[in-house]
Image (cartoon, rainbow, N blue to C red; front, side):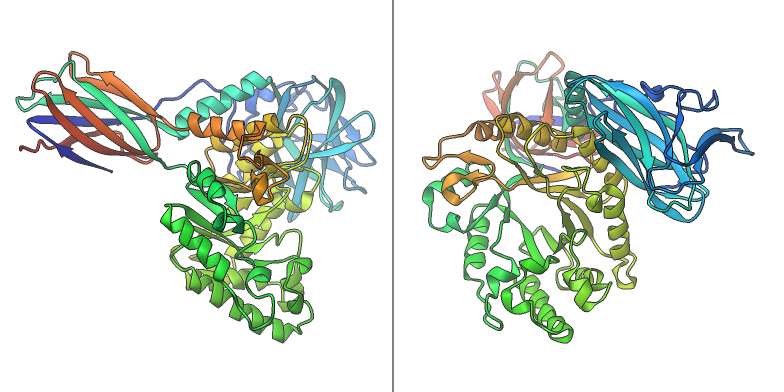
Length: 577
């Protein structure tokens, strides 16, 4: 989309071009489909021995008490390995590999089970006995599902790769196993290439005179006035009373989530006495400054996160109170928000399900969408990308809960979203696990946001924050990022971006650097002999000025660059003055 305001006898043609395919050895794609034939081994199997089982069980052994064998499909003759006679969840097949300190290892395999559907996980076993889950998927009988995962090696060591399924009565079938190592530089190149492909677009302008002759030598200035990718920051009530906090925030961010002020325990501390004063004032401040808001949250499924008076209600009393709550808060901010976290953390907790029945979450999503049809309704969960040992929130269980909500009879038209909080503990983040989880959830086609990103205190906090943000921004499935970070004076003491005098911390420097890096800035180019100028631009809104040195005339153009802009020449009519 673009608009123009031309002066004198000038015209221009705008050509939107893709960046083309960059050489990248990481495949972000996956699929939610269960396939008749398994996908080929990614990266040729990487460092795995006998990844396609063409040499029977060479390189593999039975892990635990079960038995393993290689079978062949009757139709296509494809070979795959099977673990059967299992008595323990970890009874499977395994292979020893050597991992090198500092490298990032991406795992993939095609998997199915002999009966029904079960969650199957890849597991990494270290010499000290520590077992680290690396990714999971819901496998089915009769077709192949792609499992992705990964690990970061903090030291050089042999590790054992094995698999887990809680239901020991099913056989685990596996084919086309891959473990591909990447250096940090290679991993960063994947991110940079992906950013060029999914966050930017080449724009070519052809400038012509009224006679259609090329306007060679014209000076073209292009300035980005708005970014389209939502990169924002949490906000709390201190914004209402601190001009310094206001200036700090508005000079950086155009997207936000209120950290606590819309939550039920903040707006109805005493039953029947609703008070939206602070939330209303924060909404007004955001609107006055062109800041878009994610609503957080309608309900929180944690029993300890309810208003005190809610905890003692009977099921029928709770049903009535919850109905009043959702009608009140969603109706109040209808049309003012870009998203709602409808039921927060309903993978870890089930306060409302225990009180109101198993469909409590699904019913809340239906009601919220009815009250505010234009707003995307999100799940919002922690440990899905940041901590692989918390399997409650892994990709498989997340997808399972999401499908439960979407399959509720009245939710056929639900506009749903996937919220991944991203509260990272200290230490090197497992970017391979983060990427693979987003790959798996991204296959749903639903928008994914990182909703509450922060990093625990650590000598390398700023470095880890940058790695995490780059990983999120570069992933094609991620449509927005909100950090739960900010200035110390506003109480942000986990990941602090500015001290009490609003001077940047190292993490603050990282955020400012990325804000600048992910914008096109102001560029000036001189048109060539054919009147062409060529820009590589981040998706966003731009102001373009063309100065013709021959006629001393000026053309002004407002241009919108989007990911979905068709790759065709768009002719802009000349306006005469």
